[in-house]
Image 1 (cartoon, rainbow, N blue to C red):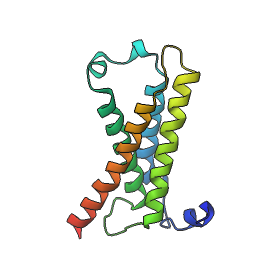
Image 2: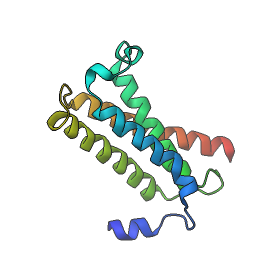
Image 3: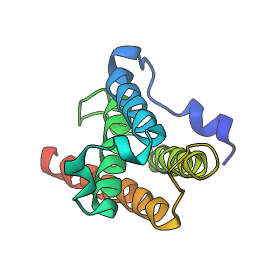
Image 4: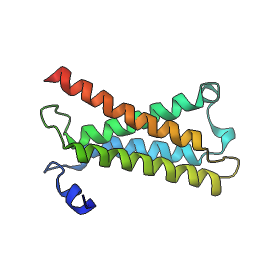
Length: 136
């Protein structure tokens, strides 16, 4: 399905007020990605890196998804659009791993971080399915 057609299927009336939390979260991820490794808070350095990555991208997927259902579980979106959101999260995570590897001093991109980002997005899909079933 062409991207243009897929995007045309999004719910009408999406506004910045619904997207603002997701955009702020994306900015938080971006800032965290470009910080030198020595500036990462010590509490985060002591935690499992992959769990942090998965959690961050679970939240990213969830906030984008909630924006497009306008925080109402009676407004489901198409399966294709859900997978488009997953692809956006995966692409964002991949791009930031490349930025870390090639641009940010003292940081390196990591395929396992990318995999953890992807897993977090996919767990978000499962989480939203469960919430829809509970709300139905």
